[in-house]
Amino acid sequence: MKKAILIVVMVLFAATNLSAMTIDAVAKRCTVYNSPMKISTSFGKHPTSEEYGVFANITYKAEEGESEHDSFFYHLSSGIVKDGKNLFAEIDGKKIMLAEKKWYGWKIADGVKIQHSLKGKPYPTCNVWVEVE
Image (cartoon, rainbow, N blue to C red; front, top):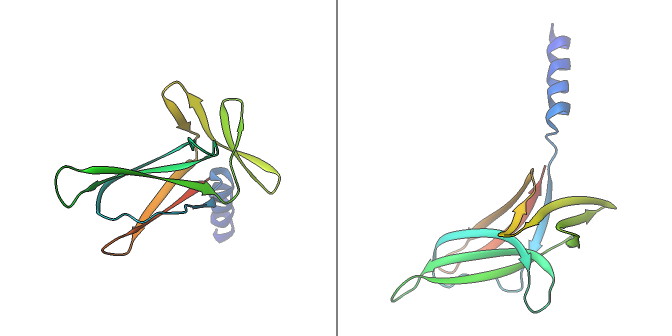
């Protein structure tokens, strides 16, 4: 009976493909100088260098007045390549699809998640990474 349960569990793990890969992202400046209220992330092209990467758009409460907005651009450690309408990361010679270009922006591919965290006080550092299943 134990062997049968073990075999079923192993088949389920193989079928669901629970292995995930994390791609680190690095920004030159990623400190938020006010209290963050909302963070949204997306793939995009840097306007000056024309490189592809991840944008973290942060809305925060300013010391005085209305809320303000800031964007940080992150380079993926593996790099991002545009091929037609798709963005790919190339890891160990294997192309992994990250996003597809639509008329309204980049649609993130299935199994891809852009994660973020804020650490430190009073001026938190924003960290971003991409998880691929």
